[in-house]
Length: 200
Image (cartoon, one colour):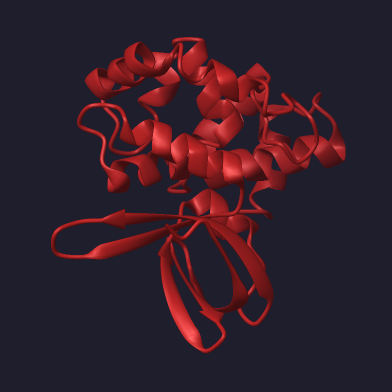
């Protein structure tokens, strides 16, 4: 099993990276979360990995954080959730927000992830609510850089507005969180949206 790779990032796309390790280029499927946090092409990077072996192919997945890989593997244990769906889930919500949504049985939040309907969201909650508890000890809820677990009403409205403009929820949340960090949580919705547009 390939647990981790370290090398030079050759190519960077939203959901795919190529890393050169001693002359061998490894293609990795990644979440938007990981893609947004790794350095630009030409820089050295380290990724935790999972090798998915199928009859017709071997597919390598990469993660910037070990906890994201562990959560990916847990998602694979859910019925009707394959690697593609698991990666889409991790692209639609940060690790911290996903853990909180499942533990809090927040089906509405889960259905905002592209490709996840009500039945799939309910299945995630039922099958993972107890199993995912261990992840709460691994994440620092609400600490800088860990990903926000909750937003004010104004921030939620700003995220939804950015989504309606065509931006992915993950990037909308990142942008709004950045504005809140820089300017405080008392901004009106209009100002939040205007400022967040600089970061999406």
